[in-house]
Amino acid sequence: MANEKNVEQAIDAATQAVMVESNKLDELAAGKAAGDPIGLNNLMDVPVRVTVEVGRTRMTLGELVKMTPGSLVVLDREAHEPADILVNGKIVARGEVVTIDGAYGVRVTSIVSNA
Image 1 (spheres, rainbow, N blue to C red):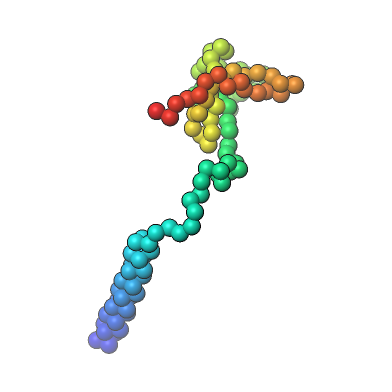
Image 2: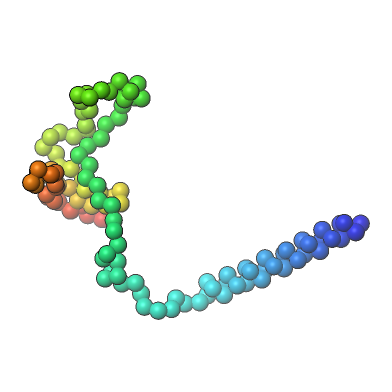
């Protein structure tokens, strides 16, 4: 009996603690944010990952392990089609692949609308 009473008291104490913390969360949710908004200028130096994708393909694991130097991977695009320019994984533009002083680059040919 004493053990049951101790368990009930512990449950009551835990329930009370959760109610108190829940009330604190309600108070935080009701409050307004303080300070100035972040603003676009403060975000301009945030680094983003830019990726250029010239095409994709699907193959079986068996086909993949048979690849050797000199193997060809056929992509799902024709040579004249533009490459996708992605920012953090989302397509934002398309362009043509060019070479600049021996390095690859991409000339933007169109911007993808947000729609």
